[in-house]
Amino acid sequence: MTKTFTEELRAAAGDQWDRVINHRFTTELARGDIDRNVLKKYLIQDHRFLDAFVVLLASAIAKARDLDDRIPGCQFLGLITGKENTYFERCFVELGCGKEERAQIPDEDVTKGFANLMKEVSYKGTLGEILSVLVVAEWSYQSWGEKVLPITNRDDFLTYEWVDLHSGDYFRDVVSYLRGLLDKEGTLIDDEGKEKCKAAFLRAIQLEEDFFEMAYAA
Image 1 (cartoon, rainbow, N blue to C red):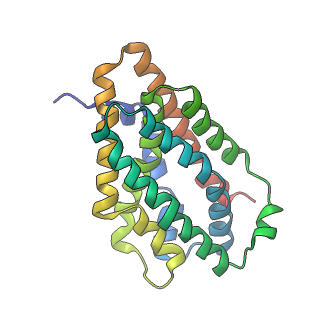
Image 2 (spheres, rainbow, N blue to C red):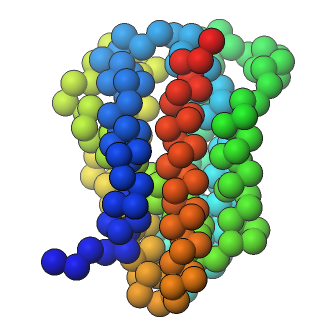
Image 3 (cartoon, rainbow, N blue to C red):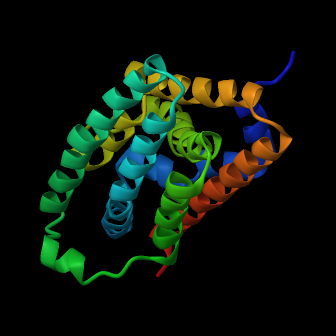
């Protein structure tokens, strides 16, 4: 059976894809026993590139080939700027980490790398490159979110809501939508375009692994 373009890209990532979705961060988060300093560091840095992610998703919407391809992206953008952003703000309150404290914490190198990649493909990349970065971000998170959902502890919203945001029927539909767009691009672009998509995909999955590792670094 012929692989879809997104399946080919995931295969190109090899074991690194599996390392991301099986990272200890994901299981510790789901069990609810993750070190709060690790979670705090992760959330502060993750929130830093929310703006770049909004630009990335908006760029995909703008460059999509027709209205039908744009509408689900617009709906997802509303969730990112609404429910997900609100989750971060509630977490910071719960963790006692106000704006002044967060402002004193510099961006980690991997945070800068992620933001730069998102902005680079948004401003200079093709639709395929934009979608490649989006698919890594959302498909990898949906993969681990679904995996840990059965063991998720429901005692603390700090942990279980992050799992819930990246699992379930709606998020599964979002990932299918993004993968569908990229699979379609794979049938329309030439080999050079496919190589650019592969390069963006592999850069993004490397950053995903580095980001989890960063949360545990001293």
